Length: 118
Image (cartoon, rainbow, N blue to C red; front, side, top):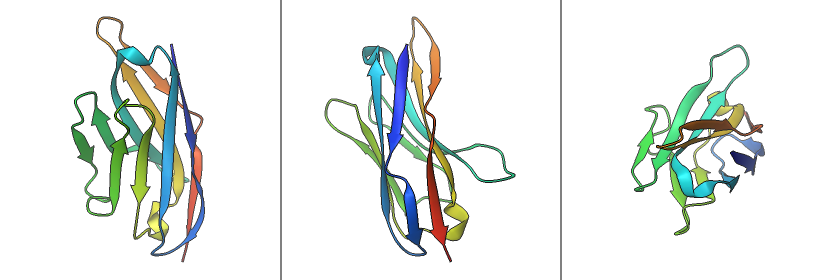
C-alpha cells in the first residue's frame, strides 16, 4: 500500500507560478511511476506529467515548456513546478503512484486545488 499526499495548491494570477509536491508513504520501494493528473470542472481527468523510477519524464502537450516535474535523489517526494499559469490550468491536481511488478498497484491522492485567475 502507498499513500500519496499532495500539497502546494492555491490561488494565483495568470502568468504566476506554483509548486506542487507529492509525498508518498508506505511501500515506497515498489514505486514504478509517479504522475500528476488534473481534473477541471465538467472535464475528464487528464495526465499532466509523469516520472518513472529511472527519472524519465513525460508531459502533456498543453504544459510542455511551462511545467517541470522533478524529485529528490530519494525519489520521493516529487514536485511539479508550474510556471506561466493560465486560467485553463485551473483544476484539482491529483498525484498518482503506480507500483510493481511483482505486485502491481495504483494509488491516488485526494487532490489539491489550483485556481488561476484571469
